[in-house]
Amino acid sequence: MLWLLTQNKQSLLNVKDVTVKGKNIEGFIENSLLDQWNKTLGKYESNERALEILNEIFMKVEESNGFSITFIMPEK
Image (cartoon, rainbow, N blue to C red; front, side, top):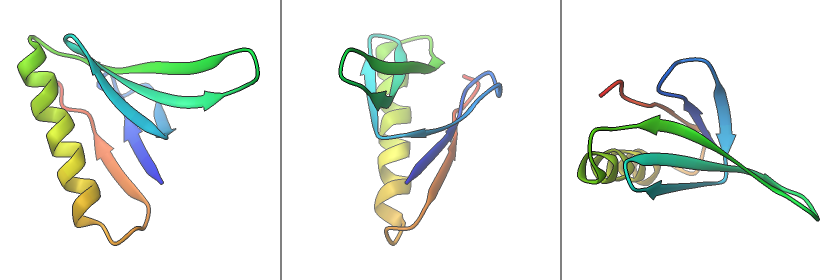
């Protein structure tokens, strides 16, 4: 279980998948028969910075022992 606090600190989300799309990091939240719900978790100055943050999230997941993981999206 991965809990992320969004960059603007307005939402705490349980995400199933995290993806970099350009300068944005998006989280996959839920899927239904007709729709898929994604949310932008953070917007950064470059694709490279977004990829660095994705790697930070990966490292946090890798360090955990399969328990609930929390991550705060950086401001910059």
